[in-house]
Image 1: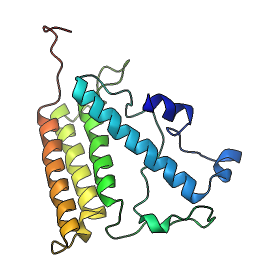
Image 2 (image 1 turned 180 degrees about the vertical axis):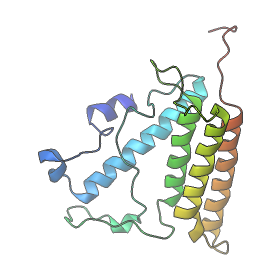
Image 3 (image 1 turned 60 degrees about the vertical axis):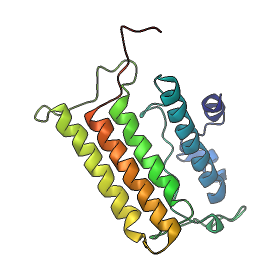
Image 4 (image 1 turned 180 degrees about the horizontal axis):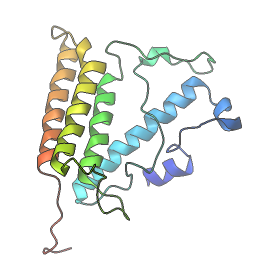
Length: 185
């Protein structure tokens, strides 16, 4: 239901020009992004809980990741663009989750109508899967976690959760989710 409502509100589409895009203030645009990506996480948890494919697939939306900003940076009604921060923010842990779940979708689910993920001819599927995980892990460390101060409890917690999520990414890379074809439906 949340995914369907998100689609009806066009949260899954990043406004890209035209009258609609110019009408959105930075606060509104950021809240739409945050809401859509939280719906993505809900969809992922529901699919894992029920053992089904997610409703939201990798290519079914164009909404960008939310900005790495503190909540106080987002002011309703303000026309000034908000610049992402180069530090840990109120939203960093959520961004780490969004980035990991985005890779999980790529590793575990093949959208209807596709035979499988696209591989280059000179690269075997396992090498590409490992490459996706390495690339995403490096991106998360460089963009977010390098700012962690292990003496600050919340930042240490963010780093530990990220490490657990990295382990999950590696598990998905080497042992993708598989449905039983011979069991009960």
